[in-house]
Length: 123
Image 1 (cartoon, rainbow, N blue to C red):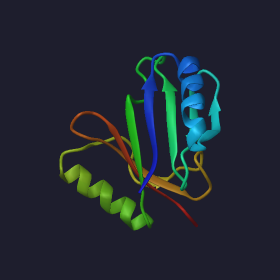
Image 2: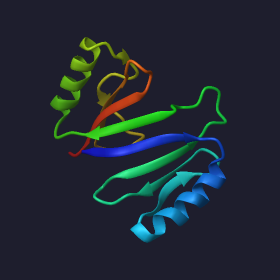
Image 3: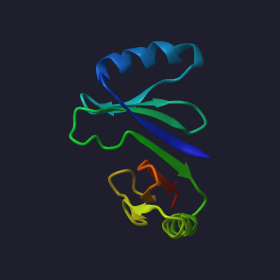
Image 4: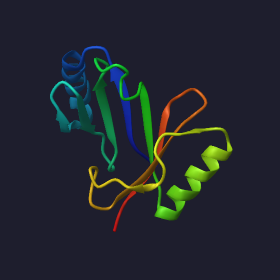
């Protein structure tokens, strides 16, 4: 299952207003964020849709997809398989306390440079 997707936008304030209005009929609302950096919208079923500013040089990522998996072992296995398939390391498996007390994830860059994450957020 996709936990969250993040896209880079050229005008964060404009995009925030756009998505707030466009998502309203779907019942998706603003969940959290940081002014001038990013905003996360609750897309239901525990999934988030996030937008981030491209003002940074370079931006955090132009596209980021995080897959929610069932265990830390699956995070580890994904990381190993992705590297063997040709991905580049962008953060090995491990705890991510800044994201949550039980957040465990890895990050790889796919052949096109997109940031792909496998994560679990359970005790």
